[in-house]
Image (cartoon, rainbow, N blue to C red):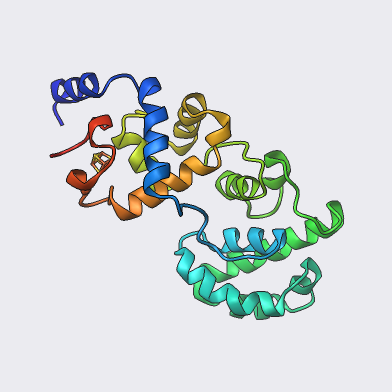
Length: 222
Ligand code: SF4
């Protein structure tokens, strides 16, 4: 896209600090049902679901965990079976060897260091085997204490299209969003972008004429 066009578009919509409030309000009204799509009943189930969701869809994870969580209820249960059995039980989520290994390592650490409970702090969550910052952010937010902003493929694409960041690296994007979005919205904000990204601002063909952000978006095509 020519630079002059980008500059013009940014001028048309105004500074991001002034747009972020209305962007959040409109997305909240548009996607009142936005939230985590994974199904879980306990903190441990939440953690396992998020770990399994790497490189697959939430629908697929829910299909697998429906049975999994009947068999494995406590951290001890994941350690009571041979690794190969857990691998078979999570096979359909893909990368089943790494995932089974990470889950068992995480459950062992939960039992050894956290009395079988899922810790709340990001610094503690990222110490768990196979738990990267994105997983930790999702878990902390769902436990009611968001300490960062989740950046997945939808959040990255929409943040760029909406002119909220110029970066491509998720860590830098998260830093930009943390500066821009009020802390009280850190939990819901990624869900709003994810749902808007799935329903309207689709990767290959954004539906700009149907978008509630059209006058706030420098990438709008109408
Ligand atoms: S106006 Fe178009 S590019 Fe901008 S957020 Fe909406 S759908 Fe996406």
